[in-house]
Length: 270
Length: 206
Image (cartoon, rainbow over all chains, first blue to last red; front, side):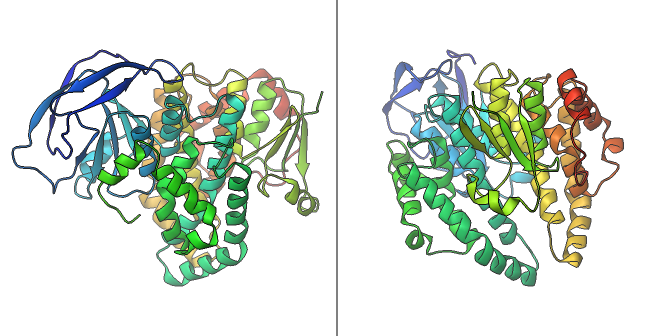
């Protein structure tokens, strides 16, 4: 990836145009070391939200970026996208937070690698699949464990978590009401208690985190999806049943960078 | 030195990919096929109450995708940098997406609902996804990523018959010759070929 490329982009909706100094991270090696600091008087933005509704009058401006352009594309919800946004925010990586509306999606879909979101665009090159993207960002920002064994432990925890999430989502997306109710009852009785307890045990064994006893990209996936998980499980009292889940959620959201991002990001219920 | 033992049912499904990788890596291992009778006793001893499970170097590994990626790194079947690894992960996840989708149909208990879902998916979802997969393999010289052999190819090959069954498309390879080409690229590797020639016949061809 070219590191000193200059590019100019037109920004349509400028939400946060405060002068600030930010770190530009080297893309070439791990662990991440800043290779420069930049200060811009104008148009120095932590992230930009493309949201068709919110166009500030006279907001069209052009800004020079002395670094690769990162765009994160996802729908206007948290679900599988929020973890990626929070990872980028934590890593101090400037990015375009492209929130795709229902109207825009049909035109955008054929331009994506697999007709799906999220998509991470790095200097015009598109990458798909949420877990692949999260792992990549995790490795970029020192959140992927110290060695291949710890990377495996993260993958293991994520795969386990995703099983639970996917099973619950399948019920959520079931259109037949009778079948849906039956599926939910079955899972409530025979599956969720075991899986949720296991997840709780995993966190107890890992200092409240999902893997390797410390903060990893798996925790960002969990936190980003937390409200969605409660919804698909139909367990709004999940916080009470498993305080460890809420604690991890809170812990990730209050991380430096993530905290700032959450305060400014558009609100979404799930 | 601790023995390497791979535990899975006598099926291919989600376990075969790991077996093929172990064979490719020249790893001496016990291919422990768990019977339905033995499973209840083993289940509580597994990390997540599931199979597959791999005991290696004194450690216990679970979750098929995580294990495949781990072995991929071990046997030189991963990328040379983070971007290359991302491309492999991306392809593998996409195949997995298709599998998960087909599984929601396959494991539907209500027969009428299952038939309805199958009709819907076969018309509205599978063609797009399988065409995309076909395109991907063609762009990568008969592989899933980087234009060459990676661990994702092994995962795909291992789960192929499972996927074919759940898609309810017995003519999958005829429709998409690139899928057969990819499988052959893995199954023709000498150590893999030898392993497959000597394995027990699975209970079901999934």
